[in-house]
Amino acid sequence: MTLALCAIALNEEQFLDGMLESVKGMVDEVMLGIDSRTTDHTLDIARAYAERTLVNVRVFNFDWHDSFAEACNLAIERARSEWILRLDADERLLPEGRVRISELLALGVPLHVDGFLMLLLETDLDGRALGPPQRSAARLFRNVPDLRYMGRIHEEVRYVPDPPRTYNFMLDGGPHILHLGAAPEVLEQRGKRARDRRLLHLRLCDNPDDAVAYCYLALMAKAEGRRIAAMTFAKRALECGPRTLHEDRVAQLKLLMRSAPA
Image 1 (spheres, rainbow, N blue to C red):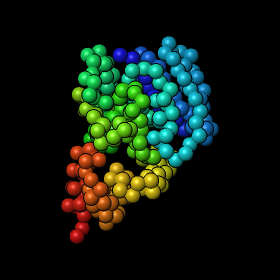
Image 2: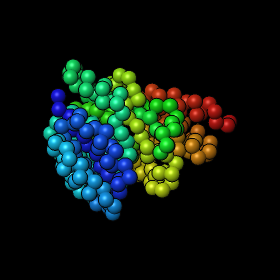
Image 3: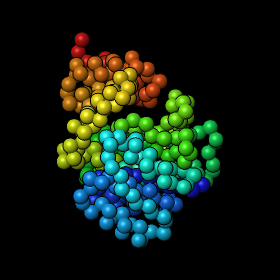
Image 4: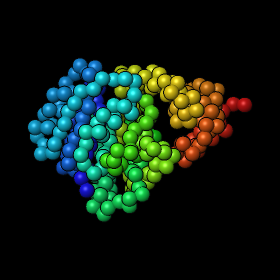
């Protein structure tokens, strides 16, 4: 089965080459969308990679409309491979991920499976783990028109005709992906917290009963020491319907509520 890497980038000269190198020799094509706001050497790095690899690398520009889902869909719509691997520029596919994906695609996948969740390990820039591996949204999924990203931020691939029917499986082993973008200095430099909070509130404008948006607002509030806000957001997320959240997220929210003050 053929595999495409799909990614988007905004001023990613620090990380992009490492991400591309992590999938070298594994993917059949690369679809890389570069945000039109980019001012650094991201495009030059992408072109250099295209020149030294045998796979088809397609680079395109896109305008940002406050939606990671929209931008990611622009990339996957250009892919021609049977399967898509989605990575961010500040991530790397770990050796364990390469092995597991190769084994999976070689053996074949039952038709009722849409994609695969993967374990993501966050570290600082010196390689120190920031916490235990976490389950990510589906990063490996079929390239079919009915599967598209939804959500302005913390976007997830869904079966468009009926999102709750999306069927994803957990990839064996792990961790599969390394994430460097959660390093404290990267978060501060790029203003990610303020951006994420703004986009989560826009998600709630789109859908006031969005459990995922409330969940991440709760986790952000907890990290910032705002315990009452964290409890309030967690309660709202669970009231919106746990079936829209991964089981580990539901457990996190319930634990957060138990640890919050009365």
